[in-house]
Length: 327
Image (cartoon, rainbow, N blue to C red; front, side, top):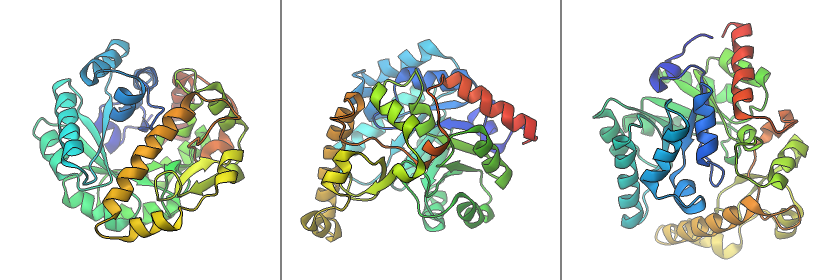
């Protein structure tokens, strides 16, 4: 298939990312996607907190499974000095271990870009609109992950086409994130002009992902109308599968939480509380059964996911469809 600016940046064959997912980014899944020709992204909190690896050893475990490029997700939102110091250490260790493709999220990527560019690496920044894109590029980002309104997890507000039209003039490679569950949708995004596509939900429904069978089957069984946005997980809308638990709890943050999130001094405390609560709930949901699950993150791509399939098969089918379409 045709090389793109993104595949050249990442050093890969297929313009496809297995996006960083808390809690679903286990080493076996990351390695399987990279080995198949795409690129798997390390989510460090999943690697250490969920799967119990000492961080450097976790990276080396992935390296035992594949010698092809992998990436790293750095959440750079301003938070506690302890969190920042930990993320800096994780980025530095990733660079020491040979990682050269980074995705930054939620803040100014400049300090990551400075470190990564110093050793010849590349940084792509998560954005949902042009305002955040410009800030990311000001910080030194080499490309953008364009998160649309069909994404799982923290979703954007624009359609894939609207977002592409809004960002194309910036002159950097764009990767579409959200709503792609089958090969035809992958081809559609590349045809729009995107240099690559990021998948999350599609790769949860694989044997390599260490999520519960109930979670995977819920993705297979879900239709687009089963996806809803809830504020009760992180304080801002997150895309999840509607379950009895979600219906019972509702989807709006409570009045006290809303007040905390609006305050200039209180919003950091509120975000910290939500983050810790989300970590606990999502970790619990990873292994729980249908009747017990709290939150299963998923995007609108569930409409095109009809079976649990190996990660390598998914990458191969997507690559074949793109090659057949000449993109």
